[in-house]
Image (tube, rainbow, N blue to C red; front, side, top):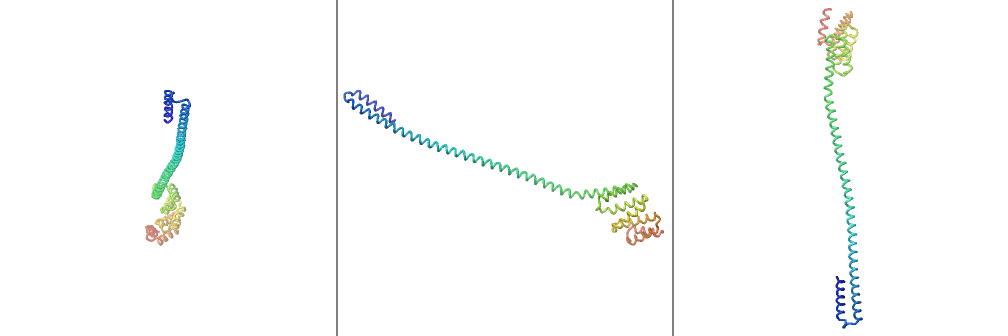
Length: 249
């Protein structure tokens, strides 16, 4: 704007100089023109300097702004990275917790199942044991003595710790007696008396031994067995039977 004013003044001066040509000579005109040019140049230089400073300031600010934006972008990138890491860690932790829960639940279910099986197992075993014993005894009742022997022998093998083993051994002896295999019957019943002398079947086993001895014609041994039976098991039903047999002989 200053330069425009200077030019306007110069034009007015030239116009005035033309109108007043008679008042000024050529030297004065040249001097005014030179002064105007000097003033215009100075104004232009000042303007250029101001524009330069303004452009420099803008450039500096632009650089600062660009650096600030770049720094913010870097911070945002780092923040995104940290967020992704946290998200991954959170997801990993959630998966681990889920896997841990599933594993714990599976273990608890297995323990519960195992406990239930252990609780139910003795009952099932007892039931199977009872059924096996009754099945073998039914073979004796219907006269299938060989099947009875085989069934009770299998029972003794499968349930060696059963409380019914002495009874099973006794019925094996009885089955041999029923098939007239008296010697084996005696040996089988002697095992009952020797292995389980306090069992309720021991007196009956001795009575069966006496019967087998009598069938073999060994009356002396039969009577001796009956006397021992009475002495050893005086209150048993077998002892009463032994007394009656001795009275008849």
